[in-house]
Length: 191
Image 1 (cartoon, rainbow, N blue to C red):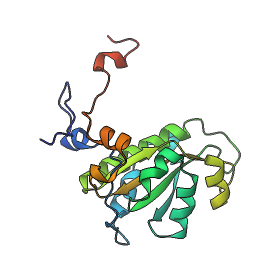
Image 2: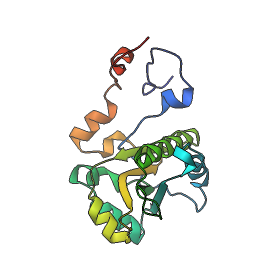
Image 3: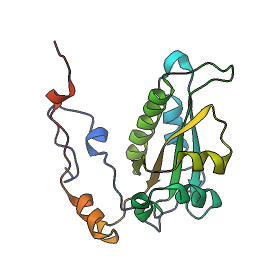
Image 4: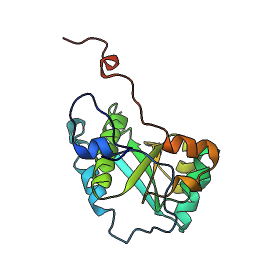
């Protein structure tokens, strides 16, 4: 068992216990053209309200113009480490459908698709880290995203790097023990 494996209070799938969100990514690692096909296929098959599938993505590989566009929108804290990942992905929710009707569950459904993607990526030996610190309006402008779509988060995907490559405050967090609130604290009520 890896020191990064979650110490769970009940058995869970190994892929879930071993999945974590590093900030140290291997800057020499590249993804071949179809390397992410499986992870996006996992996202495609996530459940959604009324099967609306309200998730869309922007995939950009390191070294491309689109990668630079996304990287430019990241908050300084995230920009300090995210550029070494093999790819950046913007996770977008279709909050209003083509007929103009609100899709109130779109962001929840997008979250499920991204969770499926993250688990599949880990099963394929890749690492994913989610970020909320970015400029949503700048992403929308840079990629001409229609207002009925809302950028919700950005994730990095790649191979694990060394914690030594990170600046000190991030390095310390990278190797710190993993923790979560206790299972019982998740419930407002429980029978």
